Image 1 (cartoon, rainbow, N blue to C red):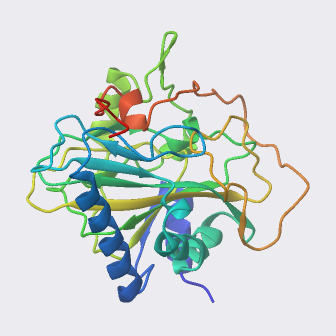
Image 2: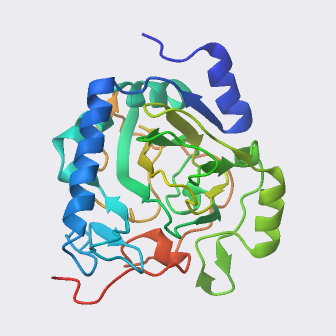
Amino acid sequence: MARLGAEEVQQFKKEGWLVGRDAVSADLLARLNRQLADWVEESRSRIGNYGETLAGTHRFDLEKGHSADRPRLRRVNNPVEVSDIFREATFDSAIADMAAEVISPDIKFLHSKVNLKLPGTDTRVGFHSDFAYVPHTNEDVVTTLLMLTDMTVDNGCLTVVPGSHLEAPRSLWRGDVFAGEVAPDAAAECVQRAVPVTGRAGSVVLMHAKTLHGSDPNRSGQARGLYIGIYSAADAMPISPNSLPNRDEGRMVRGQPTRTARLGGGPVELPAAFRSTSFFEVQGQQSVYANANH
């Protein structure tokens, strides 16, 4: 059963993004938020990043300034590995159905994470494309961003640059350094062209992986939570190591697998390998590492 209309699919192809409504049920949304609230509560007892992923990096990333009284949990890496609730959202909800409608009926899973901006935190996202972090043999890669809370301009909503997925890619390198975001002059252009993406909790943003995007800090009294997953066409093969390796990497989510890789496009700039807990650090935003095993 189609979840999206023809006009919505056309918007995705033309502008590189769209918002799909009712991606998860009200019950599933409530359970996802309870799980996230439990993780925030757990983080109060920690004084540094904690947990461990398959890559050996921390699963839970705390923004600098974190404390028991003012928790600053900002990232949970691959929650599908530690939460059946997030697994349900990833593999069994309409999120994957919509992803299949915009890129290919045959799709597989790459990785996922929660990005959380609690009230008053400083977390920002510099303009970048996800494809620059996860290059594949072809461009049929989609990022899904489930709104766990209402997403507003005041709480640091996603902003996207319409049509940028059809343009020449912008480098995330500055000389020999992988900065993880576009150069200042390109960022200034993005600011002029970007549009805010707002919506109600339970909606999902479907964003082409080459679409340039960013976001500002949360200056409101309301949290902004996004559950982010990346899916690709079955015949799109990674050409750089997954920055968030996980047990479900490559799992078919809809349709059938293939033994053939489809090649498309021109040269693709590769990202640098990094061992930091999250890309926020790659973009220069500090985490808390003091006594991280506490």
